[in-house]
Structures are given as C-alpha cells and as structure tokens.
Image 1: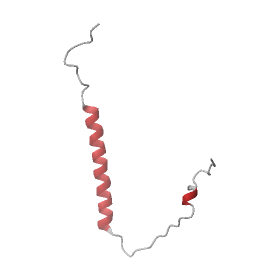
Image 2 (image 1 turned 180 degrees about the vertical axis):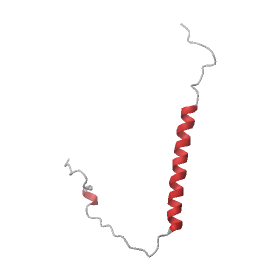
Image 3 (image 1 turned 90 degrees about the vertical axis):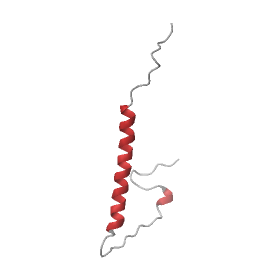
Image 4 (image 1 turned 60 degrees about the vertical axis):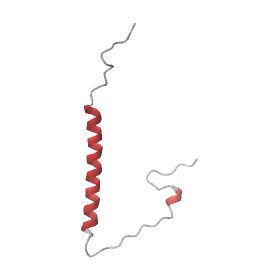
Length: 67
C-alpha cells in the first residue's frame, strides 16, 4: 500500500478537472432550496437527538432483580 501526501487526492481522482462558469446573476431559487434543505436536515437531526436524550430510562414494571 502506498501512502499519499496529506491533502492530495487519491490516485483515481488525480486526472479530474474542475471548471467553473461565471454567471451574470446567481440562481437564487436554487440557492434558497439548498439552504432550506440544509436547515430541514439540521432540524430533523436535532429533533432526533433531543427526543432520544429526553426519554426516561425504561422501567422494568417495578419488579426488582431476584437474588
């Protein structure tokens, strides 16, 4: 296994070329959709995290461990 310098892409990606086109005006509708999607994803994640943390530990119905 060969090691690659830190920060360099893997061998299979070294031939890729990135091109950007300058636009007269940004597509604000598409940009808004991206931000809305990110906000919804973050809200869902935070909601799942808080509901998992707020659940009380499950009780065994008041019955203890027999010795």
